[in-house]
Image (cartoon, rainbow, N blue to C red; front, side, top):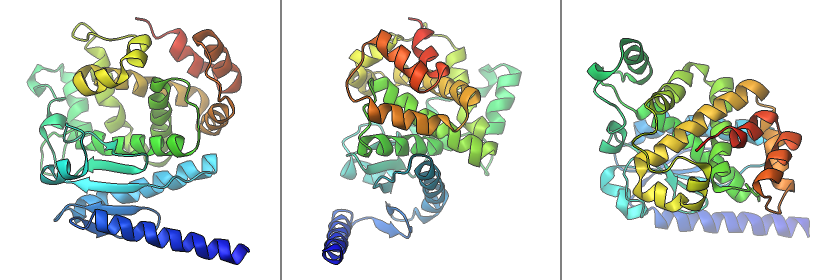
Length: 296
């Protein structure tokens, strides 16, 4: 019986692989031992930049939570973007379903829109931006930050497929940022500046230009804010990046298996007061403090 099950599983894998090959036949497959990867024509070098990091992060999180999601990565040019996703903004890493991760192959207007003119920045901040986001050709680009966001999206595959009850939509985002920050701090600490300088710059600019700032706002209007108010959504993500750093600094990588167990075990949705108490007792006070101290 065991032999039959194994053979059946192998057959299913081969069928799925064949179906994906047909689905992505206009893209170029890229060799990876752990995930399926396809890229637009001429983008093999971008795949070589992105995929080893995704593989390493996958292995890192897998050993912490004893779970491995199924992930397909598409690395797309702007010309190919609309053929494989309905998401309107070229450059934002995202899932087209619960396992197909889509990332941009090229620098783009969306990434560029987050960089203010350098001459308008204070000298100390300008220096940090130049150090964190300078490209080999001398350009300043947000590519290093958005390449790291692919690992944020990888975190969604873990909780989507792992059966976790994240309690709040925004908690799913914070969870992914905690996984991302822990990976970078433990495995690529030289990339911490690329991960943190931009969110800190966004937070430092204040909230006067944003219509939505409370956790209630983002919970109740998550899709609206994400799709129609990209800069406002970026502010929320920046706050979650900063919170993830604080949580990692307070609790270390050992918080990740605690998070996994807590959201795996608590399948019934809790009200705010009960959730704060649960997070503090089952995970760590620093996580509960995100809800306590967020503000409006």
